[in-house]
Image 1 (spheres, rainbow, N blue to C red):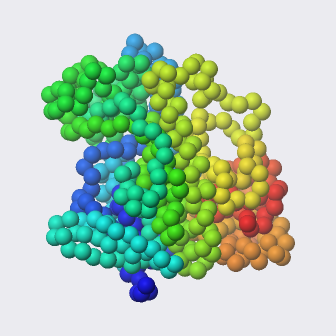
Image 2 (cartoon, rainbow, N blue to C red):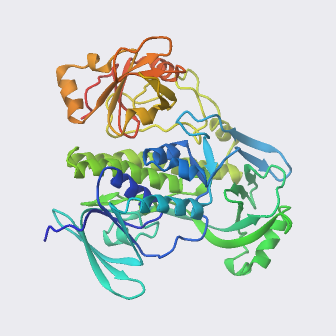
Image 3 (cartoon, rainbow, N blue to C red):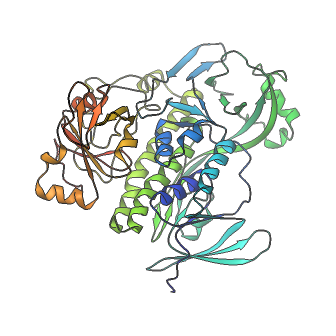
Length: 514
């Protein structure tokens, strides 16, 4: 095959997962061609939230402040019966990851528009071809050749890249062309999603409320940009044909006490819940990401976010592989890290769905919010707990008492000349070893130092606020957040990956993970 590549990576599908993948790759200097069948953003609101982990990814891409302007902080979550009994509530404590809020409500079309706007500013590296439907994909030992057809003119085109990312949704044609099975089930119940424009405020509108009921459970959520959504299951004797227009849909809202004085129906659609995952997320030089790799119920608000996290994980690794800074074998860690996380959120969504449908026992419900005994890590309900890797490019034990696999907090810290900023802004986009009042380089053997130097790692001592710094590259722990976090797990130093997860700690060996 000819080796005149049109770009480094083709991104098939340009929804939130595809855009984050393109932005992450461009951040590493990779050239991207995005192929999107639709010419406009999908107009319906699908995802409803992002959290502080996702906002930290946006921060790493330099777009968080712009995204924050089009989303709203979320107040809390509650599960309530129709007679007013509150079954469960999850309050949102302050974020430890550097965001202003732990959770945010979004209106996906608006947020997605802003993401694409940010990507347009990287036109030097990101080229987007709208109306390009992928009709064929072939790969060889060196690259991927993709055939496209213009949806308006019928013109046939071809793109040659080194790798491809399939982010083309749950019905991914790329996944089908690769012969990768999508394993799992689809629920029988059909839900109607009703998106509305808000006309006036009503009591507790800003709660994300799950109305729990065996027959008619409802999701009731404030979206950003003056929007609100209800998700309502159809009864066994109801079909989509019973709700052809907003007139019929209004009967569902009136039953909830919602009137024309409160909202104006913008649109409604129907869907079913899926619990599915691709048999494998990779075929040669083509990777699946987002809904192309996994589908989950909406109860954990994690479907879109899981896809964007897939794209970020793959993007920072693949970008470094393309630049020659990491070996190709690093790409094997993509699925090993992301699949367990997708499975976790899928399982959590299923459990939360059982709460809203009143199919869960009191014991099971209590387990979702009851701290385990003797834990080292402060307990938070799984839905809001900080992220943890369960496998992948890590060294050392995992679990409650281990710091390995955890995401480092992001407080405001100082540097040696008094500049104050969020931690990531002073660490830079690279591997970093942090030491608790110690130069972490002094804890390494010569072989370990060579390993980290080969990855371009930086070494940062974190000094307490009431002490002098001793070198030009040190940080000041202004509020003691980092030192208390490290000491909780009994470590003096950790090695951080570019995505800010702990890869290794001195207690189990600071050598580069195998």
